[in-house]
Length: 115
Length: 377
Image 1 (cartoon, rainbow over the protein chains, first blue to last red):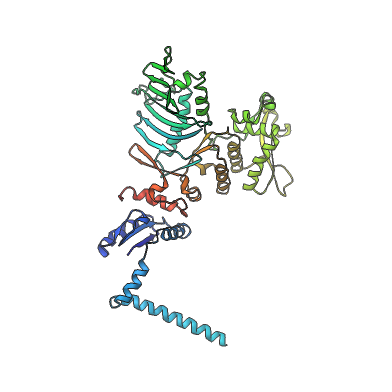
Image 2: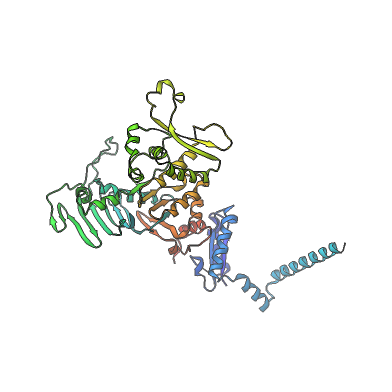
């Protein structure tokens, strides 16, 4: 699993996140450049504040993620849910909440159309 | 002239620039503040000074450049290092000259001149004893094989950063007379201040002046016309009338405004000077621009950058640390400057995994420079 972290903060997040990750996900190893991720790596970059995070850092991240084509966090997560759903209860709940929300939106718009 | 490579060391200040390769057209030197970008420009500029006889205590240089007719020159040398004897609080700006202890000039790998201590061998022949304080290019500048070298090195131009532009300047009739019958090329190659050059261009080469006006109008769409003329009597206080008789100044006419505006804004004026400088520099020169963004408003940067990229004949060496400039110039032109102590290294964007087409690459640059300190490959 490879993760691309984009943080907003100018300095604190860049210092704290890698330290947290050392304990939370010790198997995840940081790389210096975005295109060095292979297996269980992460890359972390700071947008250096707002509004750069919206106007510059997102374009920049999309560009790099597409170019690298090896960041697979979501796919890995979906796969894990399929393989073993028991320990991901919160995520399951979140997914079913999204499903419910989607259904209720569809029902509402159908009702409006009928009126 | 195109500089291909430069290596520079200043023993007095212990400042070392590792060999830098230059791009043929635009080189954008980027890096954090205080890393030595401006110092690199002044090192390049000092090559021209050395070629004109200046001496720099403890400086060692090695450069390779291409002349207009594609000859590859290698020029290297070293000044002795003298311990500074002038007290810090001394008013005397004059420095004692220092001797050159070795110097070599090669053209297409063939040695033209070699100097070791006081002995100079020129085309295989020992020369009579010459000044040890001046470079061989200055000493032998009348020689056929040296003339083109000096001409090339004189094409290094440090662009005015904008602070030194005067809005009004005296334009003696004699200068106008002198240029009346000469070519545009000689005007470009003259060392006149830029405002005087424009004033002459305005009077003698109106078609060329139109080109500057056109570019200016792209940046400032409200401007309908520009004139560069002498001040009229009614504009000058009587007490100064004799003094300012030949003064020239720039006026603009804006769309929808009837009168000419004599006191143009300093932003507009700087931009006009900048564009003019790009148009009126000699052909095939090396233009050094420090802190590109300082002299120009954001609305001008794109047009001026296009002007630079269109001018394939000249080489531009520009420094900047402004996000707008850096985001809008492809990393293909970047030269990333880093410094460890007094050792300055210049690398390409590719060396930091920043591709040529990267979007909004300023963010990559600042992170990479920060990470460089504590993350290893």
